[in-house]
Figure (cartoon, rainbow, N blue to C red):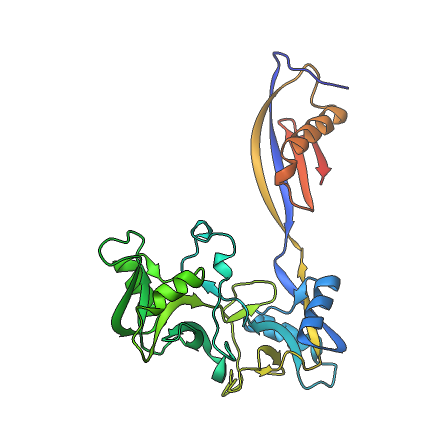
Amino acid sequence: MKHHVSLLLISGLLSLSQSLPTARKYYFVNQLKTWSDAQSYCRLTYNDLATLENADDMSKLNAATKNWQIDVVWIGLYNDINSWKWSISDQAFYIAGGAGYRNWGLGQPDNAMGNQSCVSMMSTGTFFDNTCDTELTFLCYNAKGLLQGNYVLVPLYKTWSEAQTYCRLIYTDLASVRNQVENQELQRLLPQIGQSWIGLYRDTWKWSDQSDSAYRLWLLGQPENKLGNLNCVATALYWSLFSCGVTLPFVCYEYDHGATDMQVMRLTIESQVSLEQAAVQTAILEMIKNAVKAELQPNTKLMWQNQTGISQTVEN
């Protein structure tokens, strides 16, 4: 039955009640898998490999594994060695494929000593990954290109981060290299011997679920990665680095949907029929639900209550 508007004004409250994750529950999986395979298993069966936000989460994880005689288990922290990107992030700056241009030197990037996440250009025009705290001269991009051209070699010695700050303050940003022509243009600015920072860098430690948790519980002396091949994290009481190809048991997490988030809106509705009728309330809720369907998350309830206390609920 369709309900049309009339001159009768009746006020009511509409509540959107949504179950939200409030905490993680941890599940030990006694299967030997590589870090990548463990990640796939957790994403298929639960939410993801274990993310830890604080000491309380660590205690919960330890409780999940306490009945098993195990040495170490995979968690979701890893070193993202393939996340290279340019300091200039505006995608409009890069023509087709330009953001992916690389001119790595032989054997590069090698992440020597496990802490090379910024890139310098050699006088040969090739790229080398380097420790970001190394002080080098650097190449800036100059968007206006006035007098000095589109690229500028700055003969000051700075860390990668300091060079980025300088370029953004004085010019536009650290130099991006989008193709071989630009690579040769930059190479011509470099001295015969040495290297200079460019704008290429990568992220380091990340959680599998892309959480921004900064919590770390490293074993004394960790993270230690001299050969650059230990890029996944496992834990016993403390965290250590392992080769991602090692097979270990692991811990997954799943969100606890115990809490509820509620939003309330006051509506004034004109109706020819009484809102005390359950069918009318349901019809109103369905109309509202369809109108805002794209904004509703799973496990959302629409709850109607009019001034006389009559209520109705529709679940998404």
